[in-house]
Length: 408
Image (tube, rainbow, N blue to C red; front, side, top):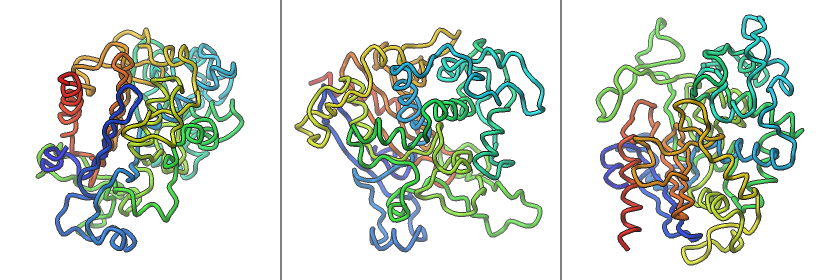
């Protein structure tokens, strides 16, 4: 981790490792930003950190797409267990607005899209659309997501889709009769004592979150410069040249969701928006591994079991949602991903393993055979999203941990 930070793969990192029901490592590395002499992000941050911005194990990170599995997929699994969600049911039965595309034309293929397809990313919806450029409100953006045109026939291929999860989350809220954040707090975060996991961190906590983007307009921008983008850094190793920075909000993004579509949805979104600590994700991972068995989560320490005694899911449900889908060529399960070749999980995670990545540089991988979980949280998108060095760091990091454990 220290080498990765020195190579400017990311400024900040927090790591949690659990093994056989115990938290065996909880470490934090780096600083909020990697720029020597950088201006203070906020007066409150400056006062708290004395200008140092040190990361601690208690530091909150923007989880980005880990939201899909920690919140949305788990909500779907709970509703499935309760008989409220039928995986093979058509989405239009809950979201009738989904039948028509953005032109208002009925696309009969959309009748075939099921909840299983949304979870497995095989619905035919595209990976991503900048819906925030036209949508001014949450309702506007949901309407745009509901009517996004299919880019492929349903079940013909897998394409990882934020749009699909936005549609899924809206449907789950309708089924549950309450918002995503309310459901998850009562059914997941509260029971597992994930005390630091939340959407929309309160204003007082935001200075304690590493920033994920610098969306300020550059001073040299003239009247003809596109409002929502500016040139990316092309000098830092690992940075992809030519990719523009977003200037959507024209401010430093700290303690609010980095994803612009999620921001337009009010910060509570099915595909992104959750904030948490590595320790809280370790609690969640152990609950998944042990199906809720173990000592109370409040007793978790390096010498105590890491899981809550509260069962949020049955073992057979976890198996169903973490088994690779049958869509041709996919590594996806229901919500979760599984190791492929090559994989960001490295080369040692077993065939029954599952995990997920987050755009801001976060990841969680779980190996039931080894009873192992590895959480890595970073803010690799600071100051923009062009640095891809984490793609080399993640596999090496996971391999080093497993090799060290198996050498004992």
